[in-house]
Length: 170
Image (cartoon, rainbow, N blue to C red; front, side):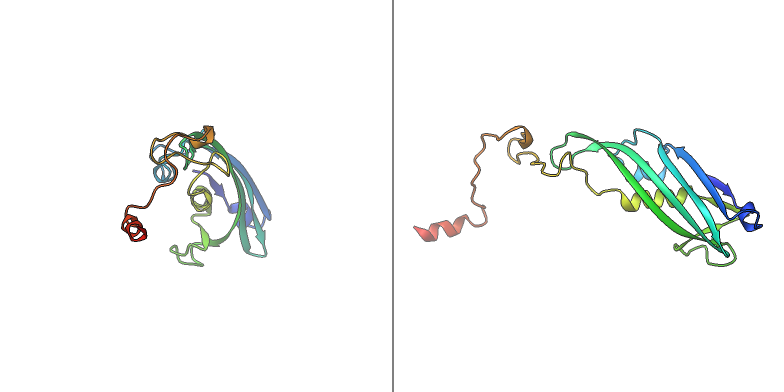
C-alpha cells in the first residue's frame, strides 16, 4: 500500500506533495487475479503528485508497467511496456459518498494511492497483446506459426454449410 499523509496539504503548509514508489503485484492481489496470463516481470513504477488548488485537490500519476505474456495470435512470448498518465479528483470523506468512483477519498488525513493505480492499469491494459502488428497467427489446421512461413495445408476450402450450393452448379 502506498499511503500519503495529507496533513501538510490539509493544514495549508504546502500546496503539493510528490510521491515516487514501486510495487510488485501480490500473488493473491487484484492485478494478478485479473491478468492470470500476464507475468509482471519488474516492479510497477509510480511517480506523481497531489496538488491543492484552493481546496480543489487532484492526484496526478505516471505509471510504468513492464510485463510478459503470450501473443494472442501465434502464442509466442512477448515482452511489453505500458505507460499510463492519469489524474483523479480527491475529496474528504465527509464531502462525498464513499461509493462515488469519481473521487479518491481522504480517510483519517491519509490517502491510499494504490487502488487508483491498480484501477487505471486494469482500464488501460490491452485486452490482447500481439508480437507484432501484422502477426499472421497459427494455421487453424496444422498449428504452424505462419510468421515463420506458409504451411502445406489446403488454402481454399468450401464452408461445409454452403457445400450443398455447389451441387446446384452441376
